[in-house]
Image (cartoon, rainbow, N blue to C red; front, side, top):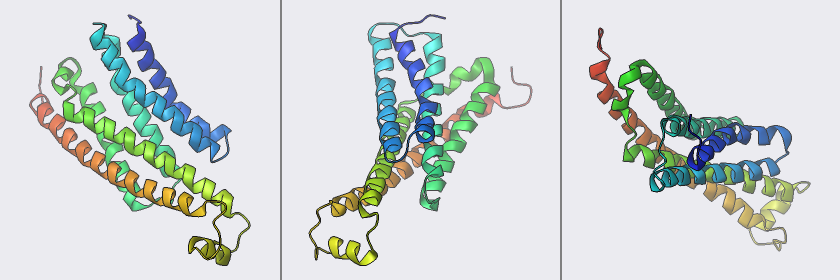
Length: 222
């Protein structure tokens, strides 16, 4: 195994993946949301840097090629599980997340089955865009949790009439309820739209990998 900076960054991203879930075990919200969001964004940034540095410094290795997709999948799968676990289980969120999770498991299974000929399932540019869009969508959905819990902290102890009066402009909004509510709603909407687009790209790339693998799935393949 050859260790260099790109490989170390990839390994750190792999380690950071379960760290996103751990944030919710040791911190209360919205601090857990903040820490998970910052950790996820930091790890996602390394996804670009490790590949760029490996190509620029000519340090591409088999170890990096193996760890990179594993780290990406771990980040996406664990983050989606956390988001769903702390959500209202809306079908608009669960359906695209399920499609993404299914595709990642399915393609990983294909690669394992194909073994030596798994090189036929090389990562395409569309698949890279898919991963990027997944990470952006997840980051936006994490930010929704931040807005939601700051809003909850601000309205704690208020009755519905007071909250309604503030949001309708009848009472001065000293606590910023309006922008916290707007941030929560828009982050949720934008995050869901991006997640659905990512799910569509996920389905397309999954179908592409299956088509490339079909010739090798016949019984008695070499």
